Length: 211
Image 1 (cartoon, helix red, strand yellow):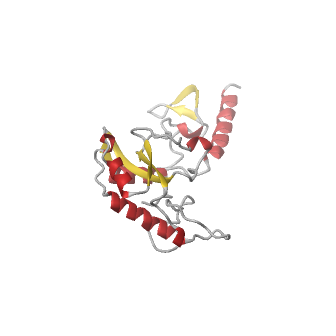
Image 2: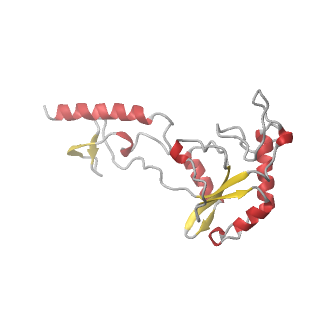
Image 3: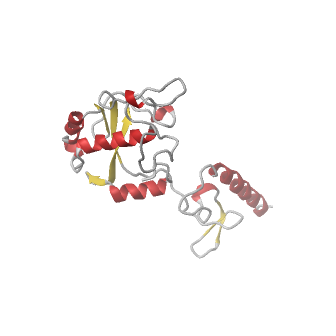
């Protein structure tokens, strides 16, 4: 899948291609370089210890991945460890500019999983690539609710409406709790603008209704 896609597109792809583990559907494995910060705030970083059922730290070898896949909580993972690591290498090769792999480069986070050195100009040195001696983080992940959008219908003055389209006196709504503003996914970065605009509109309506 395109790693830079919208959240709804990614989630649908995960449900379509993922597996079911312990009643959780759309489960997939994320493989990451332990030494590289995960994109996001400091709280997104993972501790050095393993957490059963969530994520594990292993060496980038067939033996380590085989042992991990044999764990009870990995039941349902049928991937061949050797094939997984070869896929990682193919991805990394594309990131280094030495080959092609679907969607590499579309996301800001595109970078190698295995360890590789760079020259003084920041260019990868493929001959130094080493996956076997790379400490990896392997995470069991699945789509989950990040936030909800919509639910309340409003008019242009932000009065909340009943199912019949009637104004509910004294009730106003602003922000993403309201419906009809966005499609299946909002445009990135416009939430703050909508909060300000809809909040001010609601405030003006409150003032007008109470004059």
